[in-house]
Length: 464
Image (cartoon, rainbow, N blue to C red; front, side):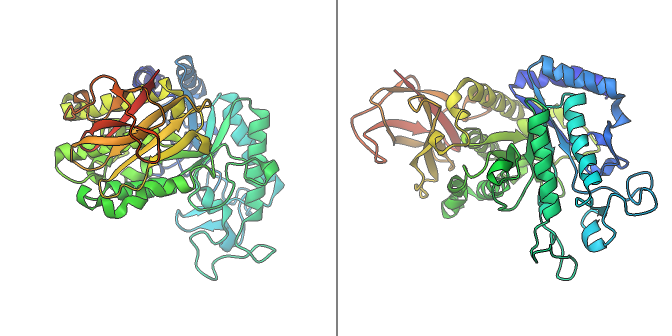
């Protein structure tokens, strides 16, 4: 499809599903389809595969008219060796380092920019601003930041050169990233930047003035890896891996995190999200719905790769369409309904997003019930009296008369249940308001008695 055809089809779908933003894999011009755009030759050109720059503008404008923000992947970490690109641009190593220990990225067969050259840094900074100002892109997700920060990234001893202090930090790349982020936030009103950074580098999403790298957000790769490992275990074994579920809250507020289920998790033999789930067909879908419920209610912004919203059964193949025909079957339609309702619940309940990056927005009720594989917690808004309660049951057992501690002696209404029949669930639910009782559990003064559906996430709201 062209940019125009694509926009006319996709914008209504994204809007109907309740998403707030779309993120595109790199749209800068690139020579090789199989790179998915991550090996860029034209840092100032929307790829002509789908139309001209005005067609591209049309697409962005269509999203904006529907109130949907647009993020684009952008790659300043490396570039391909193609003769029509930047490699040895004037016959010399103009944009890259001449020494392969600093100028070659062997993992990807590409060149690394010489961030120590003012002209190169300015070239990249202007490219970033160009997309934000000229095309009104709302945010840039900067790819492979870890490969920029470390001189020894994916290199053995003797294959890299230490910095002037003898360390492995790439001081020039750090200075570039800080300058780039300062320009984005000072020169392009309302725009933001995200870092795909997979290490424990500190203060990635903290201001440059405070010693940070200046990004607005950082991908939480640790949360993604841990929780996917957890949910891939058979339910009977999950109690032995309970810490994978809860560990992320120990550092959840160290950065402004995005929780990413990206294309990287559904390619190269990793299988689809659905195929990662254990059990029979019903349990696979139920586990994935419960996982999404946990993800949507966990601190941090949410990112879901296309096809995951209806649980595509095969891993992503860039050479073919998504398997839209699956939506004729109730289990896939149910997953799509579930994700739509999660988005609508999220957008309609401010405690789920107002304090995403502050510990005041989250409070455990019970994180230690590994034997039942049940966790429960509060999500709170700017006003701590504005909150919801989340309970996740990661076993296929219906738990009757299950007590959960609460703060107030009021009634509580179930506002989301991933086991709903409309989602291809079993339909176990808590009908009507649930009145709190003067019986304290979980170190809280009152409690409510609930039925927990199998392999489910439920969300309750106080009624006052």
